[in-house]
Length: 196
Image 1 (tube, rainbow, N blue to C red):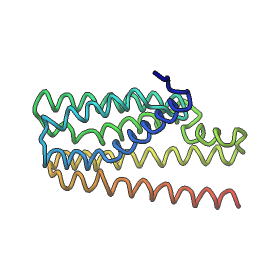
Image 2: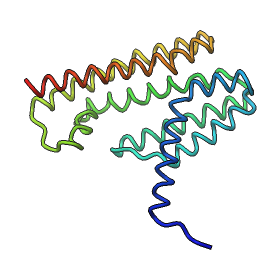
Image 3: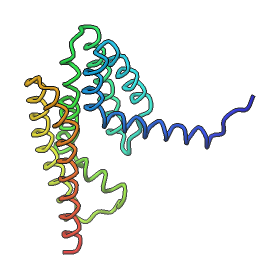
Image 4: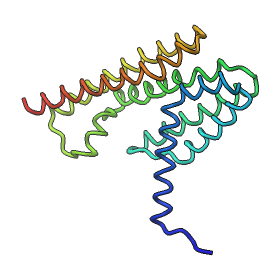
């Protein structure tokens, strides 16, 4: 019997992490597909396993992100378990609301207990930030807070509306497009500021 090398173990862990990220991103589609084809009795246990694996494999760039990732995964376990035990599909829809709420808490608290999250991330790549960049990272953190409020509110609306197609469209598509748009705009503004 041969034992696996540290390199093989590391690769397996990386593949598992990537798979977990893809599964979490696909969450709205998985819920829509699962509810339409299998029902809560099959879908909820699968989601519980996925979130438990995410809880065990999450690694972040900052300790705050690692803690947040684990809290978000735990909230997924709780919502899926509650849905399964109560036979209530509506509980599964609140996961995107929880994610936005936890991200808002993380980014918001970092404004009151500096440095802001965006500054911490920027310092991973460039430890010595100019004063202008520090001010900019604070502003970007504030913008993300506003985004999480908006995105969470719309996600909550889609939950309360109870229309699974609308919920899936927003939380599995439009929300990601808005995140990408915001990241793209921020990248363009950052490059202009760096040049200026």
